[in-house]
Image 1 (cartoon, rainbow, N blue to C red):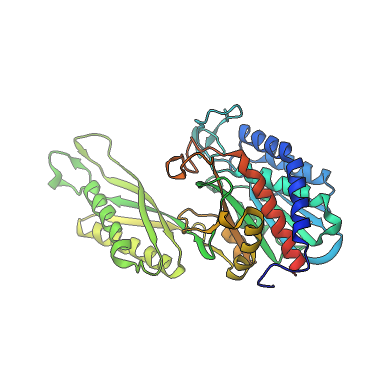
Image 2: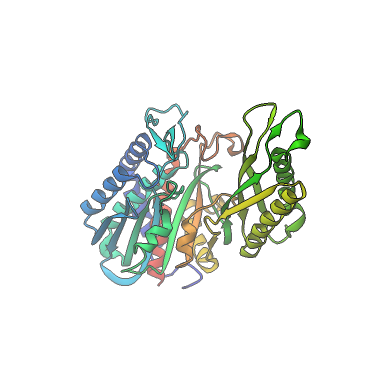
Length: 423
């Protein structure tokens, strides 16, 4: 791939056509986004959303539309009028078990049961916008398909926020069920809206951009006794508390933070039913975030070793279970270098900037392990608000400035056309 934007593409003319088509489709874009926002669906349950997407692609005359991939996902193939390579675009469709507190006319009133708990459902991470943006890109490119030199694969993915307990899902299952086969894309692009930047701004990072995310559970077994006679038993609350403190030394004392940052957090601690009873056991759960596979493995070992040895020193036993989640979202460095000039051309040089690593995780990383991928961030905080003081993604008060969504359509469309034209 060329390191710079190809000279044979008439950028000004192409960008103007993309912009005109995007502006014409803005009402549809906002209509889809608001409809999905008012009717959110959790992971592996996006049946309504997937059906709307599939119907839209079929109406556009896509060469192939496969629905119910990985439960509710949709894969659409759009062949251009000229021969060329293949590129993929991905959007996620699922909402979160969050009860909405945003005062908008299309606020979600949906409730459901998630992993046994009654909860509200909300698009608190912007996946409604991602889906609407990619549907609009599909219509933009379908309108100029005769001029496209190659093939575009559209991937609408369920369950990025993890499927229900006991189910497969997300990008891994999409890949397993063939979303990157026949045709095989040479590269994949994706975006994520974020509250940490204002609308109109784009952030990118080559290499490790988002963390891996692993979950751990620790069960500490003690011996129940009367709270007035602690010497008659083994207090798992005290032992568990020492384990929590011990785990904090992993990052501060065991990891080389000049290489990569990492995080070990205990987010849940359960134990006991009454103030004067020392319980038999306690349970903890937490998350591990890293940007390096070597450090990831080291931290897993330290969590097990520290928990086990501290428990033994207090006369208790600790059972540690670590579940590997999403891998590091690592942008292909050559593809990132190639993509940035396109983003700057469309969004404006000053609006496209290198950003800090994000400690959140994304299963876009699954695609990047198969083909080169570039994942970037687009601001959704209104221009008159300071991103430092607004509700973040995953909050019940997460707010999307719809004025910035057109930029997602324009940048994804330009990346596709530039990439296909360059190759």
